[in-house]
Image (cartoon, rainbow, N blue to C red):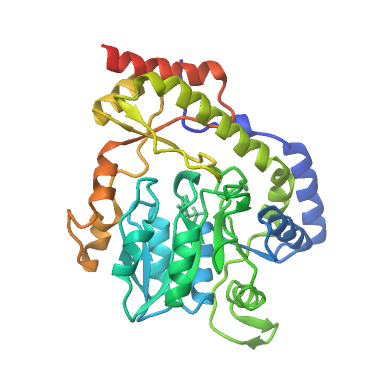
Length: 367
Ligand SMILES: Cc1ncc(COP(=O)(O)O)c(C=O)c1O
């Protein structure tokens, strides 16, 4: 049996209806900032429960523009955990600010207890990542940000429909960033991203910044970039957005099945404790495994596409050398990187495929 990490081919839905709408787009020529984009933005805002959503080129741009619109720039410091995808770090660096790393808690998300020690006179913002679809502790992080007057931009790129006490992530901070990359539950046919916010002023700033800073056709209010979500991609998003909660529900169901199947093996593989009141959407299903590298090899040889998200913490990447960090600086992230393993939990997997994954993990440890 082969169990892949993702099944983009099984997601091949509504193609004819989408193509029909794209024909309409070609006939109208409404390619940039078109009506379908406004409709998509309204629907994302409603889904997240915020006043504004603004479509941009990618989740990375969503983070960068949200940070810039929050006033982050050269000379500022921005706090983040080093165990995320490079895009979180790249977006901060692109603003000209200095990223400052803070270690993670047992949920693998930014540890609020370690934040105060990292705050300096230059600190301007915090970027908590809802890693793998698991919400960071936004209540504690929000309280610290308020006390120190820091902006909070949530990296919710992996976490659409994740929530804390029934409130969707993305809506806790000054702004939140989502990715519409094909591997995400709400995907487009290529790259895309969305910024969400309750702030009218921040939304207006982001709208300016994604479109060259143009207030109107001939007036440049500030220097921005070209980062508009294409109308064509918004058409795709409009067709798929109604499915996103069902998709994440399915991922949660799959995670529960894996949890239950792996429970007898908890001496060898364990998941982070599941928190009350938190909706973790399992964009990525991660366990901590003994003999991780051998287990990964064993699974891959048996057709299970087990991966590592992410094997090298960002403070140890070659590109981060100039930031001056060294091994040993963030022990929780470093230990985690040696132990974590991602098992397939995609929404389109069958129960038989999930059970095969569990069976193979069991075989490895019982050899
Ligand atoms: C945690 C995280 N942040 C940011 C991004 C960037 O999103 P995009 O690929 O849409 O630029 C991703 C994408 O995978 C991500 O996983």
